[in-house]
Image (cartoon, rainbow, N blue to C red; front, side, top):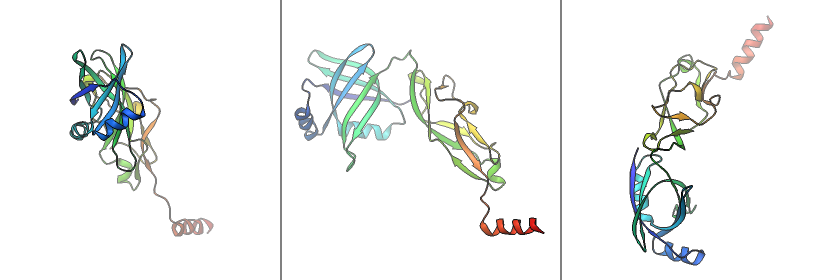
Length: 202
């Protein structure tokens, strides 16, 4: 689990005008919220945020150092949502949600498939069905990726959520019956199919 320390400021003005001025100053409006805290409007240095995110893994924890009129306060959070401008990827708005180190949370984590399926050895074609799954765990246990061993998949078979080995302390929050990857049988070409039909007709 990666952790990012991010220095941010509490902002006291809201609306389109203040947001435009923030972005002109290379900052993005943001909000921090949670079930046990009043929402706090923030201003985030976009360059600092982007640089740190590029070095972090998936689902990093944020140690937010929030400068307020009363002084600095610290909050632990996950990035819940990031809005960017389609044309250039510029950060427009960020949502941070409060987390507690002793409470399990649900996050979406990418999958990494390893191994060569038995079905591929026999001529089948490996096809991922999902690229990520939702898991539940304590914040300290959030993995960068979930590694899925696909080496035992036979041709015409799939591997499902309920069949994969998860890291210690991690539970699947996705339906166990959902397929993650499959091995397809090779398609018969038209000539081959016609030859088989001709042979069968003899």
